[in-house]
Length: 392
Ligand code: ZN
Image (tube, rainbow, N blue to C red; front, side, top):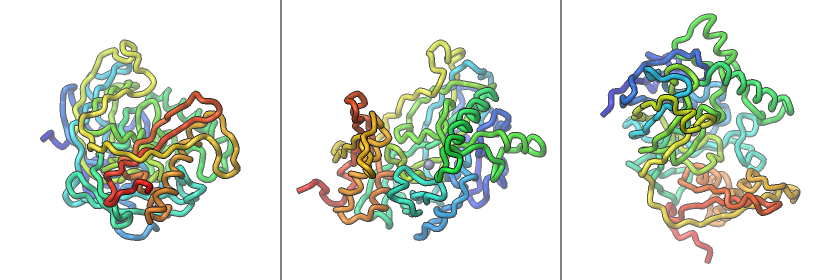
């Protein structure tokens, strides 16, 4: 078993840890530890809200969650000898749960506090708790299903350069300025509120807290991509923007459906991850991997082979407006079609929504050329249900 290089006390908030992690992206957040290329190591991770969500039956904690606190990340890891222009190679050797924390949660964020993909249809907060038994999970809040998770980090990324950070802040400020009062917001801009920045103190803390990018969106550094198949055995190639690359990880999911549509999120959990790092010198230019990470999925996946697939096209459900090739609308329609069907099996809309966000559901862009309709699909594995769900 690799040596644990980042250890946590699950009972304490991130800033009170022996070595605190961080919840912003900034090149000046100090590394938690350093390793040589070729080294494998273990990092412990807290669930993304830093312990705000409890194992109970009330969604009040989801409704009132402090979103300035997310995502609490483990790291950064400084990889010796790695320079901007290199590729950082990261193998996800294994991911697992803690014995004292064999459960996770999914939640629908309230419209006024975060929102979600189907926010206009589901504006109220809701929560489901999922219990783990080995590779399987079940929920007292979504009965009649049991499935194997594809366990993965929702968030893994490297630090931006100062130049890249400024570009993120510029473009996200410009987007937000187009509708500054929108609920939920168009973007989450930097804020010192609830910032955790490793061991930074004093004036440096204040500056980095003011400038540091929020961890919510995925960006050029990877980050919160929420890719369910970025699981055990995957190899990721990250473009490197700062000395040492400064790799961070967190937001572990026991399982997740494509799109993570309820926003809170997959099945969110605390746990550990074993990583191995290496470097390809000058790899960004050589392999033209410059703008976003590239990865090879691992070979460990549950063998679900039978699906019921729901289609959606880019026509707005509210007013029948024809959108041009809009995959967002088409995916929303596919999800809504799946939810309406699941309701005929006895689920509430909220239960069906949380199931789509938690189970290993496949989302695909089927067609993006057949003007004016994009077609997206949502594929639900039929074998996760206790009973036969096929029509007829
Ligand atoms: Zn997550």
